[in-house]
Image (cartoon, rainbow, N blue to C red; front, top):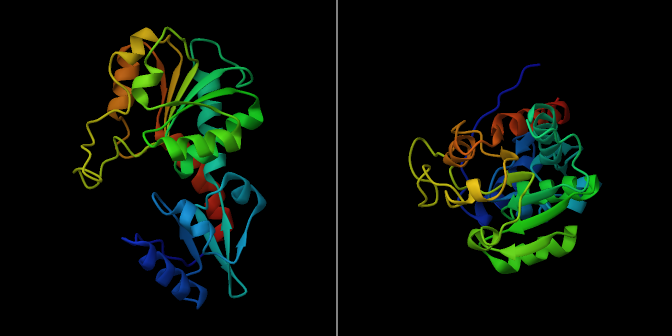
Length: 242
C-alpha cells in the first residue's frame, strides 16, 4: 500500500465543510475525524453507515465513487477497551450486563460508549457539564442522566466501571487544550475511595496516564488506558481506508 496519513487542523465548521468539498473532488481518499467535529460531519457526508447513524456521530469518512461515506469505529474501540476491563479486573466482572457504569461526557466517544453499553444490557449513569446535551443522549440510549460530576459524587453508590469520554486531561503538544490543563480530572479526587473499587476506562491516549487514571489507580481501582480504545477503532479504520 502506498499511502500517506497526515494531521490536518481545522478550526471551524466552515473549514470542515470546505475540506470535505475538496475531499469529494479527490484531494483525499479517507479521513479520521476527531473531537469536536464527529457529530457535525454526519450531516455533511453523502451516505452514513447504519451503526454511525444510530450512534449519531462519524469518526471515519471514506471517498468512494465521488461520494463521501461516514462510519463510526469508536464503538469497536469501546468494545475492545471494555473487553480488556473484563479480562483484567480484580473485581471479577465478567459481563457488562446489569453492571452500573458511569459515563463521563456527551461527545462522539460518549455516544459510541452509550450505544455499546445499552446493547450489552448495562445500567448507565450519564454525567455531563451541559445538561441539554446530556439529557438528549440519555434519552436516546436509555441512560440515567444525573448532571455534572458533583452530582455523581453524592450518595454512597458503588459503581463497577467509570468510562471517561471527555477531552479533560488530553495533552496538546504538552500544553493546555481548550484552556484546560492536561493535569486535570473530570472527577474530584474524593470520588474514588467513596464509590467502590471497580474499573476506570480512559478514552484519551495522549498522555497515556492521565490524572483520571492516576487517581483511580492510587485508590485501588483497576485501570484501562486509552491506547486500547485507539487500537480498536484504528484497526477498523485501517480496513475501511485500504
